[in-house]
Image (cartoon, rainbow, N blue to C red; front, top):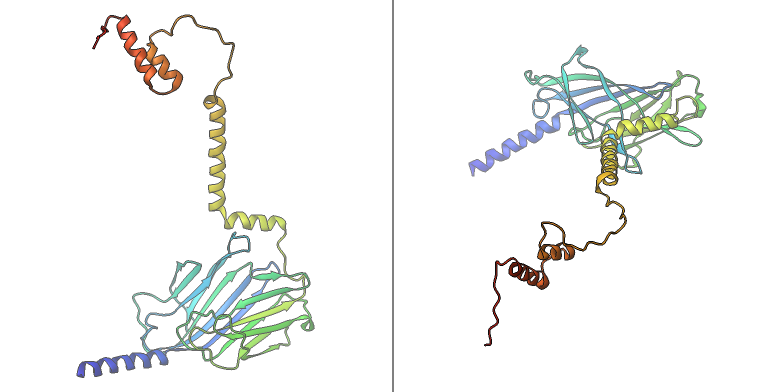
Length: 316
């Protein structure tokens, strides 16, 4: 009985610690350049209790997708800087099935319980959607993989200069993946930036996704050559395999034409003597590509002719 009580207490303490660990604020600043690239700075303030946040936190970034034709797409993700409380923080990256995980902190350093502010700055590209009458940023600000509640999330998007605030359409969604909840408010600032703020807590595995529509012509749209280059670089492994298969097929075709193809039949000259060094049975075997009764009979008669075998008639 005491054992079960102790287990219950331990579980309760762990659960309490897990609930206390949280993301106090999640602030993202996204600057879209005219070339279509984005510079993103995420400032994440957490409260750690040493339960799941021991050495630091990690952040997952999806980089690998498939288009509607099944072609691979791999976008750029380049970490520029990682900070903790304003100071440079060690980090390392790890390739995941569909992206990159960035680990903040060192394996040899454990955090004391308390509040910590992490900041990561990274560059990415190919995040803009190009439509017939507008361009669009569709962006999951926080991700939906956090084990902790997010008390408040904000996102500030800076567009290229020259876009009228009347031509900007902001929209956002909150909650679990696929949710259409709209627990947020948005405003366009005097400098033209768009700011989103959540109006309720985001629970574990929930996030903030924003959509910003703006006129075409302010962000470079990849042309046909750019798209072909992306297609090659994103699928070079498969393309090299295909090229190798085609080269091998071409080689076999040339080899077959050179030595594998049967030569054309020439003038047929009748032979009045059996081929040299071939017995009648061997000739029969070659002609039929197999051994049969006639080949056996020919072998017996040939042996008799050569005096290797005698045949006698038995009246019985």
